[in-house]
Amino acid sequence: MTYKLLIGQKSYSSWSLRGWLCFAPFDIAVDVTSAEIYGDSFAADVAAFGGHSTVPAVVTPAGGLLTDSIAIAWHLAEAFPDRGLLPSDPVERAEAQSIIAEMHAGFGPLRAACPMNLRTGWEGFNPSDAVLADVARVAAIWDKAIARSGGPFLYGNFTLADAFYAPVATRLLTYDLPMSDRARSYAEAIITHPAFLTWRADGLREDTELSQYDMPLSRKPWPAATN
Ligand SMILES: N[C@@H](CCC(=O)N[C@@H](CS)C(=O)NCC(=O)O)C(=O)O
Image (cartoon, rainbow, N blue to C red; front, side):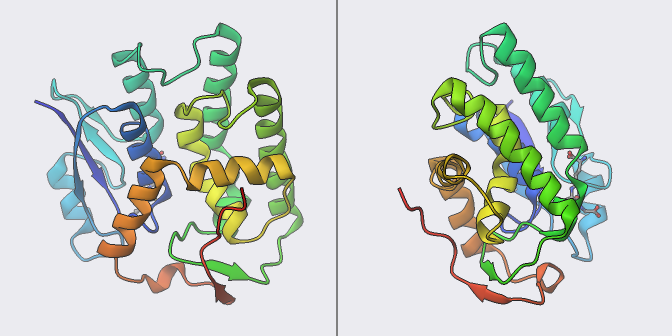
């Protein structure tokens, strides 16, 4: 028996990306199946998997059900204590757990105003004060961790904290939000991580365009890494 993971469309489902990044970068075997968000059978497909209305959902090898990304993260950190899912230093580990929880529970204005779309960048987005406040808090979190670790990821190597901030990293780049050089380098490290590259390439191949994720803005190419 292996883990089973139910996801939505890779180009658009930020919570699914987080869920999958709890497995792939840590070489944890998982069978992935998809349900189409906004598709007619989405609710039925999630229910058939055993889930409860949203993706991601996971069935563990023992048959346990996890219907929320943060539960998936905590379960895997506990099940695979030697794979580096969380930093080993106790202070960094506590901080990582805290910023993961903050991501999971917060940043509503940023998430609502800037839907994740891994198929395009956008020209001329005008962030509200609430979005700018979220961006400033994200930058402060990244800055503190990377100043200490030296990067390229928040705690040096890729951890669950990076899995949770990955969709935000894409938004900062695709909506051209204001960011420091350090934040840009971090966001670029995320979008060039092998697991992210695989996910995005699969999404470009598998997904159809969802008009629900369109913005009243001109499109521009997917951001190229500058370093
Ligand atoms: N708190 C949940 C959020 C999951 C969530 O909202 N997933 C979205 C896809 S990104 C979804 O399933 N939307 C479909 C719906 O709400 O009908 C988690 O962390 O897993």
